[in-house]
Image (cartoon, rainbow, N blue to C red; front, top):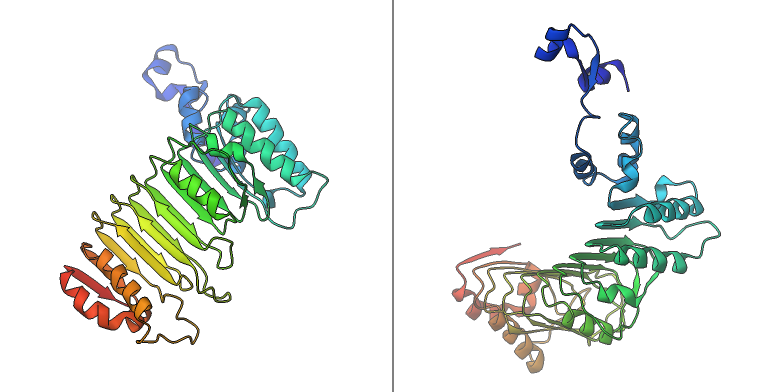
Length: 337
């Protein structure tokens, strides 16, 4: 620590009333005098690499980082994956409780460690330690079924991983779910949705060429749903999203390759942001004589009829203009972009 930093951290005892009594000029280490519970609370808000740096602040802080119940690492901070694996193993062994487990691993990892075994072991250890927040980005790694039965889990964020088929799902405390380019099958997704009775926020970035033809987002507790994805892949005319969430308040749809949206129960909707083309993108034209398609679009708009505020893209209007003209009079506020 530099000289200025040392002055900020320490103050002379002679400046306090007590020091004036005894005439002592000794310095007080205010950082070391902080309660350990308060120190841990402060460190919980920092990435693990920054938490480790705090060990140089004072003697008392030297080993506290080992017991902070949060792991937040990026493999880019290590020269090789073996070093990362060794560090996580030591961290998990020294912590009886892990509130937050966040890990970013690239696809170009080098080392002798079995990636699949490591991912399963670490997540399993976090679950045993009553983890509340899991955030994992790890291209190509399979997430094993133990994660489906973590009763303490409040938020789950997964990116570029593969979800294995579950036998049973019970996530009674889960409120936030983010699946970003996650590979799963239709059966696994249906079970996941049904096993989250307290889910409030769901964000899904969907692969265009996955093996799920009908995506059923059915939830009695969901308040916010954000569904988006790339439009750069090949067409799939049969992609369908069924949305049944009677408590939903905020809805954002931005997935150009989904052909059909079926709205069944959105009676509480307040805000909607719609940027979809019902798969009529990249030069593919809408046929006004396609009555089934027009009926689907009309029903979709009717399903949003109770929304208070809507933001809608020009591309959406282009394929649903006739139906939208009659529908928009029920809106209190509408924004076009």
